[in-house]
Length: 412
Image (tube, rainbow, N blue to C red; front, top):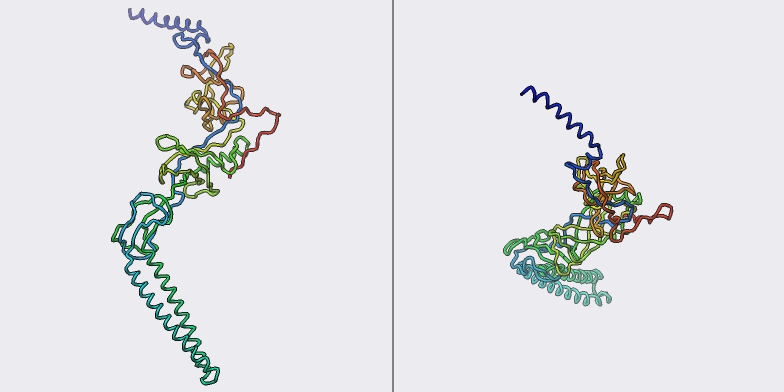
C-alpha cells in the first residue's frame, strides 16, 4: 500500500497543474476562488490651479512684554495688585519704603532754602558795592568779587533745585506703577524683600490685544517654496498678505483671523529657520501668552498642478503609490500600481487632495474608489468616473498656446 501511494501522488499533482494551465491567465486574474473583478471608480487627472495652505506650530506671545523693575533701592512694603489679573497703565503695583526718600527730599529742600539765602546776600552785596566802585570809593577788585559771588550763589541755587527735583523723582519711584495695560504676571518679590534699583525684576506685564503668534519656517521648506515660485508652479500672496487661521490645542479654530506682521529675512543660526509672526485681535483675552497653537496660512496657489484624492493614495514598500486603470495584452481592464511623490495637502471642495509632485501625468486614469480589493495587475470593472479634482477657487490650467500664465508673487 505504501508503494502504491508514492506512485499515484505525483500523478495527482500533474493532473492539478494541467487543470490550472487550462484556466488561462484571464481566469487566474478573476480572483482567488473565482471572485469577480473588483468594481472601481476612476478619475482622469488634469492640471488645475489649486489654493493651498501651509501649517506650522506656533506659540502666542504678548505684543508688548514689559519687565517691571525697581527704579530705586529699598524694602518692598506692599503689593497692590492681584497676580495674573488685568492691569491698567498707571495702576499702582508695588510700594517701596518711601521714608528714606522723603527724608532726603526734606534735606534737599533745606539745602535749596540755604542756597537761595546765600544768593540773596550775594545779590545785596553786589548792589551795595557797585555804586561805590563807580565813584572810585572802593577798588574795582572788590566790586568784581561781589559780582562773582553773586553768580556763584545763583549757580548753587540751580544745583540745589536740580538735586531736589532728582530726589522727588526717586521718591515718586517708590510707588511702582504699570507702564502699559495688559495681563500681569506673578510677583517675583514678596513684601519685605530688598529691591535693587534697575536690577530687581518685580513682575511682567503682557499686552494681549492684539496678541502675537510666533512660528518658524524651516530653511529646507523655504528653499522648496522659492524654487517652486521661480519655476512658476507656485504663486504666493504679495507682501505676505496671507489669511491667518489659528487652531487651538483641542483642534478647534479660533474665531478671529489674523495677518502676518513680521517675516525675518535672516536664518536663525540656532534653529536653522526663518522666524515669522502673526497678529490677531484678542480683545476678549481668549488667547493667553505662551499657548501652543497651529498657524494655518492661506492665500498661496499651486499652478498647473495634478492632484488626486487622498483615498486613492496607498503606502507600499517603495513609498506611496496609486492604482492606474490600464489594459493588459488581451485588452482587459486591470489595476496597475504607480509609485508617486506627493506634495502639498489641499483641502478641496468635496474631499481632501494630495498634489502630485511626480509619478503621474495629465490624462492618467487613477482609481479612486474600490482600491481595498485590488491586487497589482488584477482585473477591474469600471463603474464610472469621478468628477475631476478641484477645490474652492480652483480653476483649470490655461491650455498650451492660449496665453501666459500669471506671474507668481515674489516672497518677501
